[in-house]
Amino acid sequence: MANPVVAIVGRPNVGKSTLFNRIAGERISIVEDTPGVTRDRIYAHAEWLGKNFNLIDTGGIEISDQPLLTQIRQQAEVAIDEADVIVLVVDIQNGVTDADEQVAKILYRSDKPIVLAVNKVDNPERRSDIYDFYSLGLGEPYPVSGVHGVGVGDLLDAVINHFPETADNEDDGTIHFSLIGRPNVGKSSLVNAILGENRVIVSNVAGTTRDAINTRFTAKDGREFTMIDTAGIRKKGKIYENTERYSLMRSMRAIDDSDVVLVVLNAEEGIRELDKHIAGYAHEAGCGVIIVVNKWDTIKNKDHRTMTDFTTLIRNEFQYLSYAPIIFVSAKTQQRLNQLPTMIEDVYDHSRRRIQSAVLNDVLMDALAANPTPTQNGRRLRVYYGTQVAIQPPTFVIFVNDPDLMHFSYQRYLENQIRRAFDFTGTPIRIIKRKRQ
Image (cartoon, rainbow, N blue to C red; front, side, top):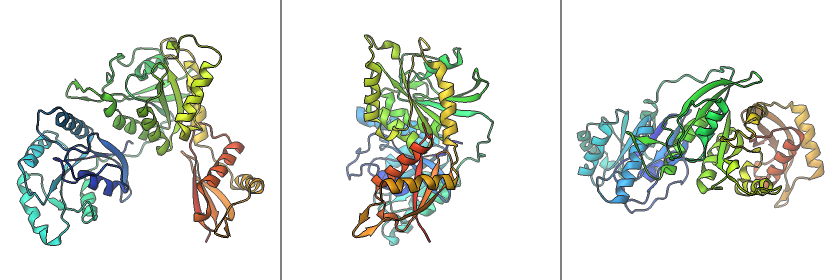
């Protein structure tokens, strides 16, 4: 099932981004002691007590007619709509403000579980001041320090208690795949072309698709698939401008439910920065990936080099997806669409491939003989043996004398040797270095 979504909201300059970085475990959001620095929603995967969830950082909610502040408020409201649990952050240094009360009123209307975090409680003597925040009517306030991490554990305990009860995905015998990409690359047109019917509303207006749509269908060879279409996000019937900013969370949710992800590019518009961001989520999630270049029919004056040049561009821009196959299609003319089900099935099978330990170690020994392990500060890396421990993505543990001696370039070399020996086209593989006990 898709991971629960937690949105961190509040008025400007209460420390939302600092708390976000603390929970996410890395410095992702820009932190600056100036209101309004965080202008776009930022996303991250997080985990607490074995519970995985997606985290959204938002710009501060401020009631104003100024264009920038209005956009920030709109982004925060969209994040609230997407969230399963909302963390309202307030600031103990300023106490309960009129802006806090206004934000609380917005949250009342969301009908979502709300956890109140009183930030900047760096001095234990000020913990008694948190009781003033009961006046917001949001239940127990949790004192935290985003800077020092104090109280964050108790806050997260309260957050995960509100997660919806969902059962794990059952194996329904179908391959789940999704189409992700920035708005207006032709995802919905591809859905209709694959299904052979107008199952999804199609429009040239970015953001027309308003919800994820799961469709089960059977390919000509009898293999069953479940297709997930995603696109722009709407808020209360209104499609916001700059919908590219609002496509990431829907894409992340679709990725969580997918075995294989089709990263859809627009041949006419080329590669944009958001394309790389969205594709990066699929790679990090360990899904199988196929790069689909749509609207190939719009490219005029094609010759024998046009496709090769575009492929080279993709490989340069998406170096982390070097394992992903590329297909050039047209939803309008249905060019090469009949090849997609077979490609999806192949990538799915590759992502579930298991390699016997004896065969794997033969490959590793041949790799070591062809390119001996490097030395560092007079110490040589020794690789003892490897074994596969997981699928989707295929994950290998390699036992060594000291994991710190394995440079990422040598790890990449071993990965390439594994790929050369076994067909893992379309799927990332993970290598875990572990010291032999």
